[in-house]
Image 1 (tube, rainbow over the protein chains, first blue to last red):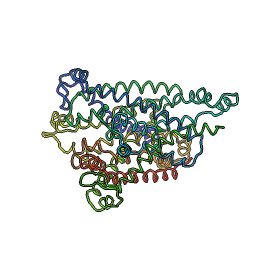
Image 2 (cartoon, rainbow over the protein chains, first blue to last red):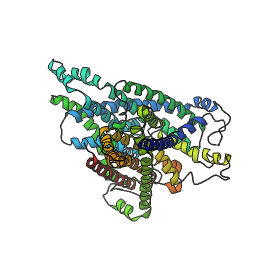
Image 3 (cartoon, each protein chain N blue to C red):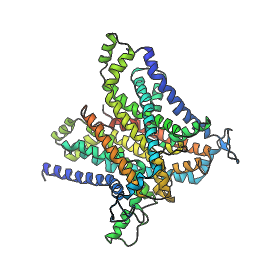
Image 4 (cartoon, rainbow over the protein chains, first blue to last red):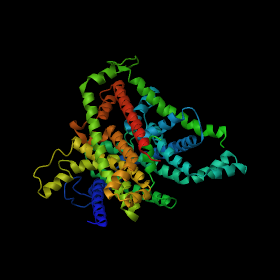
Amino acid sequence: MSAENSAVQRSRWLLLHAGVVFAFLYLPVAVLIVYSFNGAGVGGFPPRDLTLNWYRTLFADGAIWESVGNSLLVAAMAVVIALGLGTSAALALDRAQFPGKALFRRLVLLPLILPGIITGLSLLMLFNSDGIKLSLLTIVLGHGTALISVATTEVFAGLQKLDRAQEEASLDLGANYWQTFWRITLPNLKLPIIGAALLIFTLSMDEIAVSFFLIGRDNTLPLEIWGRLRRGITPEINAISTIIFVFSLVAIVLWYRLRVSAEGASEIGAELVDTAAQGD
Amino acid sequence: MFSRAYRAAVTVPPLIWVTVFLLVPYLLMFFYSFWSVSGSQAIIHSWNFENYRELLTIDVYWQTLLRSMWIAARVMLFSLLLGYPLAYFLSFYAGNRKDLFYQLVIIPLWVSYLVRAYAWKTILGSDGVLNTLLEYVHLTKHPLDFLLYSPFAVVLTLTHIYTPFTFLPIYASLEHIPRNLVEASHDLGASPLQTFWRVVFPLSIPGVLAGATFAFVLSLGDFLAPLLLGGPSGIMLSNIVVSLFGAAYNWPLGAAISLCMLVLVVSLLFVSERLEKKWSFS
């Protein structure tokens, strides 16, 4: 067998393997979407009685939409907290020297790799001992804190690529630090910051392990779904998940376009996972 | 080039936040683990090692820890077996479709974790999609009941969830391999298999370690998949913690288990980081 032949054979096996992995990754997504239109409810093969009834039920379901509103609010506030502090932390790690810097870096990044239950429970103990009542606000604090790691990683990666000569020039030409930050540093970090914001928003919308322990009276969407799952399976959950999936897909396509136009695609998200697992 | 005020302005706010919302809560968890709970369900703030003694002596904690680690180890193994060849295919054989395939790996991550676990439940249930399909094509007469409410279901679901996370760092490390090294190995007469095992694989080890750590650590601490799909035989350590913080109401004991988990995770990260440094060539 010639070398080319075996190379072709190898790539065929790899292609077959890739096909199997993709089937495995997409099977639940496909089932989710198909059964959101299934008149006979979830499960049962083949799907029958195509219907939009579950979407009608969904749109009339006040509790779900209230929880969607809560989730959007929490996610927006988590973006503000995590992005503000994460950008600041990235600048600190890039530019300042202070005692305990190594510990600080590890602490900031830890929630990225730590199971959510530990972050959630430790915050629950904090709020409990301070007599703070659990509410959407405690969830915002939890998400904000856990997701600083995402903003820090993304912005820090952006800072590594930043050419400091521009900032030096700005300072030499008489701009103060504040002006330099707003006019030079921040515009140069536009892409990592937008990317981080989208990631934080989506992660917060989906988050359940931390929220699970910090929930007050008002539900976020994942917790509302969780509550319903415990009572039984309903295709309404398929319907809301399908809608959110479509929205996320639009968001990711927009983000992808944005970043591809600025740099190569292969790095997106990889630095995040890489940093998380390496701890630095 | 940055003034003292600038450095203080960027350092102080996150430093305070991280101290209040990360460091203090971890310390609080540490303190709690030495306290106890009274008959009237009040926390007694007297220091003792009772919780840790209980963890060491009562079998159920050990068994659950071992089961959790065994589940996490299988998830890690399967994620690597699925993720590595996929990453290798993308990096070396996918040509200009690379970015498309890459996006295809990422997209399922945008369906929420909970919803994907729920989708597996609807697939694996006794009147679920898979069982009714098997009966429909006359492969089985009765539903297979080992599919759901078993460790199998938990491993399957967590593998599904963490395969993309394992894939990402492996792919990144494969992409960083200078292609002229591979060509050099080829030109010097190594077979493709030799080139893979002697050049490509060793250089991808940091990515493999990162991905493996991710899959192992995150599935070790999971409690939602076992609650949803695990049944009694699929209970994991975090489920015990959840019940200790809920109905069983023993926060100090729950804190002791969480703290052990935290220490275990941080040591694993430490080891993996050391190994990655050892294997990275740059």
